[in-house]
Length: 343
Image 1 (cartoon, rainbow, N blue to C red):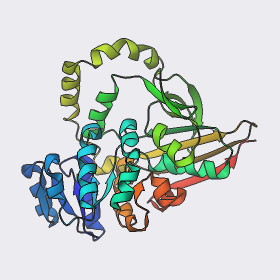
Image 2: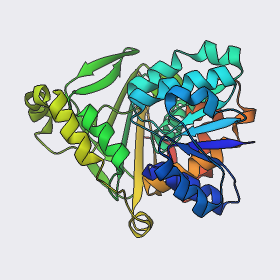
Image 3: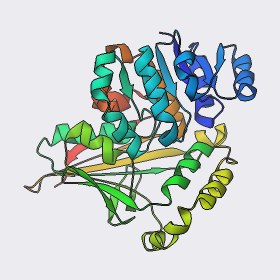
Image 4: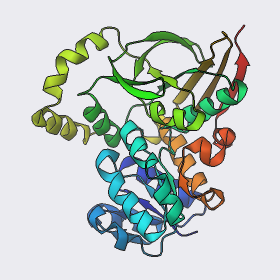
């Protein structure tokens, strides 16, 4: 399979490219800036292409699959998906944005007709949480409610930070009765029983509000992470300012200065995921996993997922609907506990 990493001038795209070469892969490297793409391609001895998303159809000529790593995906996913559907290239990305998942999910029939796999969220957003959700559904088919929580160590990249700036202007979101609803940030708090220790977490909008429902059919989904006390009350007060174009420009400019965690930091940090599902009869099941640093997990997942695509039926997928709930167990350094019934 001839595949491409688009967005190698970003932290995660470059990480994917380097890992691919370490594993004997020869992806084509691509992005919008020759000054940023060419040096990496020359260091790694790889073919490279330079094109903007408005020329993505031309840029994908001869490519079987593209790993799209250039965010924020709220603005970049649609033109790349359009190009993939026209050229027949399979599409993967590393988004965690609810609206991007929803938008790509609505293009399922187009993808089937084109013979293309659309697979957003094949990184830490949302592979571990999506696979845990599918495990819990398999363990408790009658589940009506699902809570998913995560914590990550090691800091963020510029792309992640820019996406956070966009999201800071809005509150929370949750799946309620099968529908995505706007809710206050941290509208629920609970204890999440991670593998290392229990932690208090608050509700946030996370990609699984979209994907977990598509993967499991569970109609009530809430996602959590560690949230400072009082943030839920402060966010609505700050939101009008955060939505202004000036605040967004300043915030994103600051975010672009973030370099992302270096190799030493990534080696010394990890990620944790917890999930709990329950039904109307009071039955509950839990599962948890520990993984490597979220960026290392993302790069590992992208490189492994590419070559599994030919076996996936065309259409829009989640990680677990494409590869099964045990896909996360195939990733380096991941340890899963459960699912187990809660007594």
